[in-house]
Image (tube, rainbow, N blue to C red; front, top):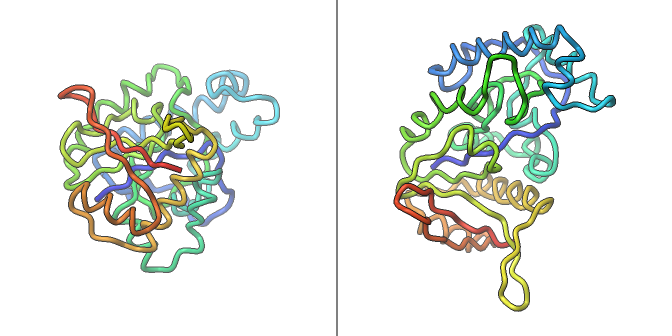
Length: 252
């Protein structure tokens, strides 16, 4: 089973070592990562252009310097690097060694800069979003050349917890066992309402519970059953068409 997480705009500082693209998971992406990192570092050499391309405000100016120093910056595991609502709820630093090892096998983060990275892959702090504008690169087209095939080659259940913006960069396969997750609340009259802020919090809590429990999941029915026992409600929604990815609603 694979849990596919979004990245976060905010990153934790610090770490050790320096970026080595050759040690990241999914080595098929090394050439693409190398090209994009080089372009992002080059863009950071023009501060004003980088501010516009990354859609940054004045208080976010240090993000440009982060990108300028990418090749010399310290690294840490991806699951520790990201901060924000989802990753605060996940609280990966407090997971035990077995849970973290399980995370590396089952959790993949979709980075706009590095493509797919596993939980313990060492990455630096950076700034690049799914809608950033890198000169001569259209991120949607850039990553769609490689990511869908990698995801399609992943066996078993794929639980896509990404935002729609990142899902567009590399769609998960439309096949049995691959589902996109939406977080909803159920009103007193039965109507369902999509959640925003609590969407990320619920995904972080769900991921942490999964990593602590370390279930062996082979089918969606097994996933729904495990979730029920762990205190989560997952409702399966049928796909809109033969080429559409099915959806699960995580009721928060």
